[in-house]
Length: 353
Image (cartoon, rainbow, N blue to C red; front, side, top):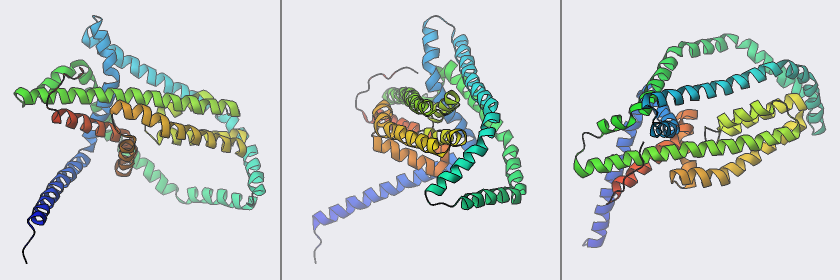
């Protein structure tokens, strides 16, 4: 029986493609293992690059207006830290000042919740039983909870080390990013260096676009949910909306989680019906953001299809939790920008860092 030449060529090509895919998969697996092993270094550097992409335009603008680069970097960093610190101080102080009133309202809201659940067929005794079991679980697991808290404090040194590394990298990328990039591209020569230089600048430009798109989407989440809280009479509207804005920097899940926190405050302060309204508002705003704004703004900014954005975030959450969700889209955008630039036959100069 003679073998069909076309079938043989097809099998040969399929075998070659499969072998190439296996090599790529093995390389990706090794890269993932290396990154996981060096997470204490990789994560701070990645966060520093994201912050640099956000702050670099301000530093560049000041430098173009004859402000020394070092002074421009210091002004932008100090201003950014002061702004974030002021926001966090305002949120924490407002919430702490409101705790006595919320604690007073908790008893009445609990009784209202019992009555509301009774109207939908849930016996109030069942709610009391759940609350009792929760208290008993906390009492029975005090030792393990304390151990977990101590373990968290035991990693404080690594957290501080990562923070110091992130700040160090951020400062020098903002101040001396051009020279650092020129040094990194030294191993390449001629047209290869030009292509690598264009790829890096294009990737950094896309990171900047991603961060500004994220700010817009987070602001829309905060305004939409904040208006809903104001209309329903929930207290702490401004600090809760601010938390939603900060949570929006974790794509897809951050604003939803902080929105549920607002629903919990609504449950304590205004009762179950208002809390249900707040949950519906959070879901509606998230649907608008996830199905309209996120694809329209973020996807265009990083030049990725909405499906690619959602899948990247899903994989990031599955592999690395919140950090994975935050870094997934920037990582995919960087890979896309570098690949697209290197595959182009003729390169246009990319935007400056």
